[in-house]
Every structure is written in structure tokens, then in C-alpha cells.
Length: 327
Image (cartoon, rainbow, N blue to C red; front, side, top):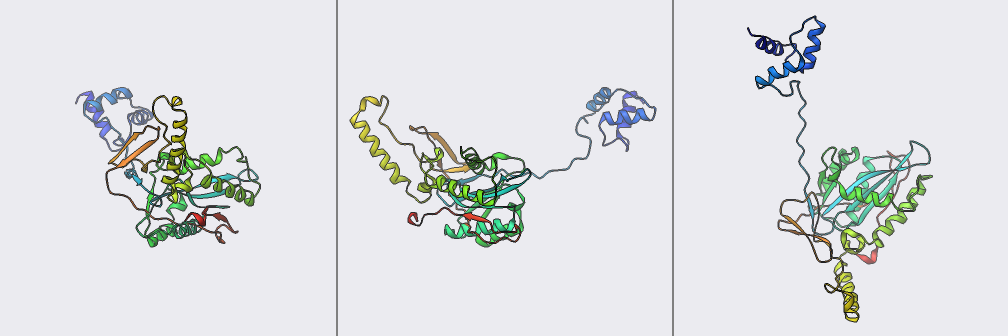
């Protein structure tokens, strides 16, 4: 038997069959045996076509990339929970936010002292009720946090006829709208370093969400407010802006060198991981627009009002920033 065959036979032996060459080398040395160097073991294995992972490996499931498309409000919602620093180190308040990805409108939010599947369930149910979500209309997307995958939430979504979707594990890009929204919240100039109590957090969030929904001109939706887009007033506002720009052009056409001015355009679609069939281009105003060639997606969602949560231990406070006049 040649030396190479002897080395290969040792590597195939039961104690070493699933060990890396470095492990085999060290084990043999401890038994006062030297066959060859680790590099030589690799050369012998390579000649036999056996250079691969020799240890038993856990097979992870192949998670499918979520591809979600919304061409109107109340088709796809995204929700997440973010921590707010409390008055002392290691203390937190938990902010739950449900966001419509097409309009960027916050349809429901609440602040509590802990993560709770029961609280999440009520928030989703009440949000769907306030938005008049019908079975089969909505898709609700979230990451894979405990509250998002809890049985009470799963059963509620099934009862409401809401399709659920989850991000892939350890992939932050699968929930971009919620992540971007929390950044908008936490980069506000008046966002405090810490909140003194739950009531302080609630007061700040109530002011923020009112501003965000009704005053914030969002760059992702043609510098319109989320409320304007969510309740179908976007075309009227854009037309009024165009009239203003037309008057400015008529008065001073020399100020507009290339073309008559146009207001930013509302994108035709919003998506998480563009589904096959979407085309994007940049229009004259510089806004990214999408054209969808396939079937439209209709998801379902809910909204929430304050109520006692037994898992949290005290009454959480939430809000659904809706204006009766806007419906």
C-alpha cells in the first residue's frame, strides 16, 4: 500500500471520517503517530475528490424572499416594535407601529412596558376595524420577533382573512418601511435621550404621529403627507400644485430653462423586494415610479385603542391617527 493510500485509509477510518484534517493531525500526534502534514492530507483528499466540509452540517431551511407589492392604500401593511430608552439603564418602553407601505400612513400605534402578543393582537384587530379592512384585502408584513409569530396573532390574522408575511432571518432589508419610519422618529431634533415614564413616551409619540401623518411631506410619496395619500386626496393636491407652477411659469418663463415646472409625482406602486413584473424608471420630476404588469395584491389589517393588557401589567396607551373629516 502506498503512503497516499495509507493516509486516505486513515482519513476514511471511523474516528476521523467526519473530522477536518487539522483535527486528524492533532489526534494522531496525541497518539504518537505522524503520517504527514495537514497540507499533505488536503492534497490527498483533493486528489480523491473529497475536499469539502467533512463534518455533519445542520441543514437550514431555504427561506423564500418576500416579494410584496402595493398599488393603493390598505393593501400591504408593515409593523414592528422598537425600544425606547426608559428613565434608568436597562429600562425600556416598547413602541408598536403599523404602517401602510403605499401611503406611509401610520394606521395604529401603542406604547407599553413590554412586548406582548395579546397587545399586538388587539392593536392589529382594532387597526383593521378602523380601516374597514375586508377579508382577503390585506397583507401584513413583519419580522420574526416573538410577538409577530405568536399563536394569538397568527390565529387573529386567519380569522380576519389577513395574509401574513415575514422577513427572512437576519435580513434587515426585508422590512425597510418600518425601519425607515423608526429612523425618522428617532432622528427628530426633539427626540429625547430617555423617557422619564410611560406617560412621557405616550405624549411624545402622540405629537409625533400627528405631525407625521398630517404635516410631514414625505419624499417617498411625492412630498405629500401620508394622510393625503392614504385617503385619496393626492390627485387633487398635485393638480393644485401644478396650477401654482403653471402660474409661476406664465409670469416668468425665463426662470425655467429646460421645461415647464412639474410637481413631484406620486409613485404608482410600493414594494418590499420588487416582484417579477415590476419596472421602475425616473420621471422628469426626479421621482422613482413603478409600473406593475401583473395582478394587483390586496392585503388586510387592523387598528388599536387603549385597553388593559394583563401581560404588560398596566394600561398601555395607543393611538390611531385618523381624522373623521378625512374619511
